[in-house]
Amino acid sequence: MTSPIGGIAPIGIGAVSGVAGAQTGTPAAQGTDGFAAVLASSFDRMAGLQASADGMAAQAATGDLKDVHDYIIASTEAKLATEMVVTIKNQAVAAFNEIMRMPI
Image 1 (cartoon, helix red, strand yellow):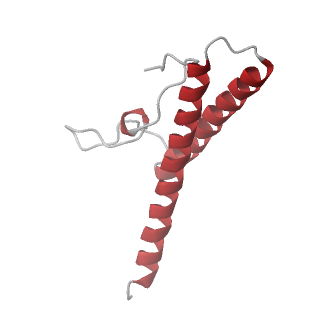
Image 2 (tube, rainbow, N blue to C red; image 1 turned 45 degrees about the horizontal axis):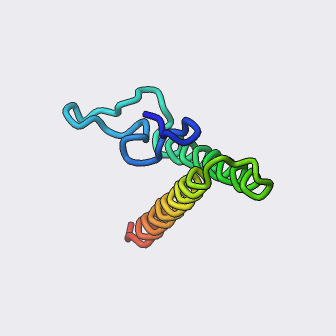
């Protein structure tokens, strides 16, 4: 699935590989490293969205951008991706801290 802006796939639950299959309960992508691979791919995708938005911002500043809406959409996608990755990181840290507080 690609976005109409620059061919970048949206980030979301459906875009994450390695999420458990709905009917079988098994990982959708066998052979992946699990959470670490999903998190790394999310960081890479976030960096790509931010680079795309930065490139469009430079084009808008120089007057080379044909439609300012493309920049607004790319900027919003980058912002939402950043918020999602930060939220996932915060929840992972909170879960780790909770596990560390468990008595042995």
